[in-house]
Length: 114
Image (cartoon, rainbow, N blue to C red; front, side, top):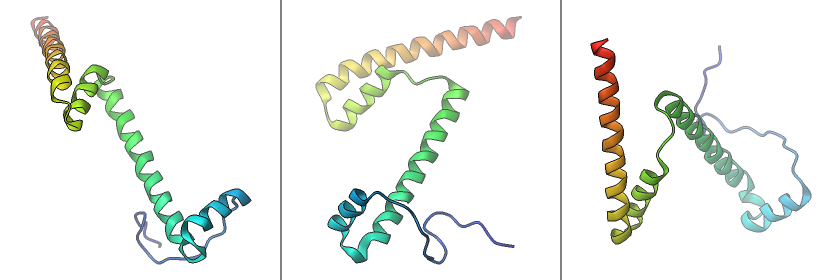
Protein backbone atom coordinates (compact mmCIF):
# COMPACT_ATOMS: atom_id res chain seq x y z
CA UNK A 1 0.00 0.00 0.00
CA UNK A 2 1.49 3.37 -1.05
CA UNK A 3 1.72 6.12 1.53
CA UNK A 4 0.57 9.63 0.75
CA UNK A 5 3.40 12.14 0.81
CA UNK A 6 3.19 15.88 1.27
CA UNK A 7 4.28 18.19 -1.56
CA UNK A 8 8.06 18.36 -1.72
CA UNK A 9 8.52 14.97 -0.01
CA UNK A 10 9.40 11.57 -1.41
CA UNK A 11 11.59 10.53 -4.28
CA UNK A 12 11.81 12.62 -7.43
CA UNK A 13 10.59 11.02 -10.63
CA UNK A 14 10.15 12.33 -14.15
CA UNK A 15 6.73 13.26 -15.49
CA UNK A 16 5.65 14.63 -18.83
CA UNK A 17 3.78 17.92 -19.12
CA UNK A 18 2.76 19.89 -22.18
CA UNK A 19 3.63 23.59 -22.28
CA UNK A 20 3.37 26.28 -24.93
CA UNK A 21 6.62 26.97 -26.76
CA UNK A 22 6.65 30.58 -25.51
CA UNK A 23 6.32 29.36 -21.92
CA UNK A 24 9.19 26.92 -22.40
CA UNK A 25 11.39 29.65 -23.90
CA UNK A 26 10.65 32.01 -21.01
CA UNK A 27 11.30 29.23 -18.49
CA UNK A 28 14.64 28.33 -20.07
CA UNK A 29 15.65 32.00 -20.21
CA UNK A 30 14.94 32.36 -16.50
CA UNK A 31 16.34 29.06 -15.22
CA UNK A 32 18.71 27.68 -17.81
CA UNK A 33 18.19 24.19 -19.15
CA UNK A 34 19.21 22.43 -15.92
CA UNK A 35 17.09 24.47 -13.48
CA UNK A 36 13.68 23.95 -15.03
CA UNK A 37 12.54 21.06 -12.83
CA UNK A 38 13.39 22.80 -9.56
CA UNK A 39 11.67 25.98 -10.75
CA UNK A 40 8.50 24.15 -11.80
CA UNK A 41 8.51 22.12 -8.55
CA UNK A 42 8.67 25.35 -6.52
CA UNK A 43 5.87 26.94 -8.56
CA UNK A 44 3.60 23.93 -8.11
CA UNK A 45 4.26 23.76 -4.36
CA UNK A 46 3.49 27.49 -4.05
CA UNK A 47 0.25 27.10 -6.00
CA UNK A 48 -0.80 24.12 -3.87
CA UNK A 49 -0.20 26.24 -0.74
CA UNK A 50 -2.30 29.06 -2.18
CA UNK A 51 -5.09 26.65 -3.12
CA UNK A 52 -5.13 25.25 0.43
CA UNK A 53 -5.11 28.74 1.94
CA UNK A 54 -8.05 29.69 -0.28
CA UNK A 55 -9.92 26.60 0.93
CA UNK A 56 -9.21 27.51 4.57
CA UNK A 57 -10.48 31.06 4.00
CA UNK A 58 -13.66 29.73 2.38
CA UNK A 59 -14.21 27.37 5.32
CA UNK A 60 -13.68 30.18 7.83
CA UNK A 61 -16.04 32.51 5.97
CA UNK A 62 -18.68 29.78 5.83
CA UNK A 63 -18.39 29.30 9.58
CA UNK A 64 -17.88 32.93 10.70
CA UNK A 65 -19.10 35.10 7.82
CA UNK A 66 -17.16 37.41 5.55
CA UNK A 67 -14.35 39.54 6.88
CA UNK A 68 -14.84 43.26 7.43
CA UNK A 69 -12.81 44.94 4.65
CA UNK A 70 -12.29 48.07 6.80
CA UNK A 71 -10.70 45.92 9.50
CA UNK A 72 -8.48 44.21 6.92
CA UNK A 73 -7.39 47.60 5.54
CA UNK A 74 -6.64 48.83 9.07
CA UNK A 75 -4.50 45.82 9.89
CA UNK A 76 -2.74 46.06 6.52
CA UNK A 77 -1.90 49.72 7.24
CA UNK A 78 -0.43 48.71 10.61
CA UNK A 79 1.72 46.04 8.96
CA UNK A 80 2.95 48.54 6.37
CA UNK A 81 3.85 51.04 9.10
CA UNK A 82 1.29 53.65 8.10
CA UNK A 83 0.81 54.82 11.68
CA UNK A 84 -1.24 57.95 10.93
CA UNK A 85 -3.66 56.18 8.60
CA UNK A 86 -3.77 53.03 10.67
CA UNK A 87 -4.72 54.78 13.91
CA UNK A 88 -7.83 56.27 12.31
CA UNK A 89 -8.65 53.07 10.46
CA UNK A 90 -7.93 50.84 13.46
CA UNK A 91 -10.11 53.00 15.70
CA UNK A 92 -13.08 52.77 13.38
CA UNK A 93 -12.47 49.07 12.81
CA UNK A 94 -12.25 48.46 16.57
CA UNK A 95 -15.45 50.44 17.10
CA UNK A 96 -17.17 48.42 14.40
CA UNK A 97 -15.84 45.21 15.93
CA UNK A 98 -17.08 46.25 19.37
CA UNK A 99 -20.51 47.06 17.97
CA UNK A 100 -20.59 43.69 16.21
CA UNK A 101 -19.53 41.92 19.40
CA UNK A 102 -22.14 43.78 21.43
CA UNK A 103 -24.81 42.93 18.88
CA UNK A 104 -23.79 39.30 18.97
CA UNK A 105 -23.84 39.29 22.77
CA UNK A 106 -27.32 40.88 22.77
CA UNK A 107 -28.53 38.30 20.27
CA UNK A 108 -27.02 35.48 22.32
CA UNK A 109 -28.58 36.87 25.49
CA UNK A 110 -31.96 37.08 23.81
CA UNK A 111 -31.64 33.52 22.60
CA UNK A 112 -30.72 32.37 26.12
CA UNK A 113 -33.70 34.19 27.60
CA UNK A 114 -36.07 32.54 25.12
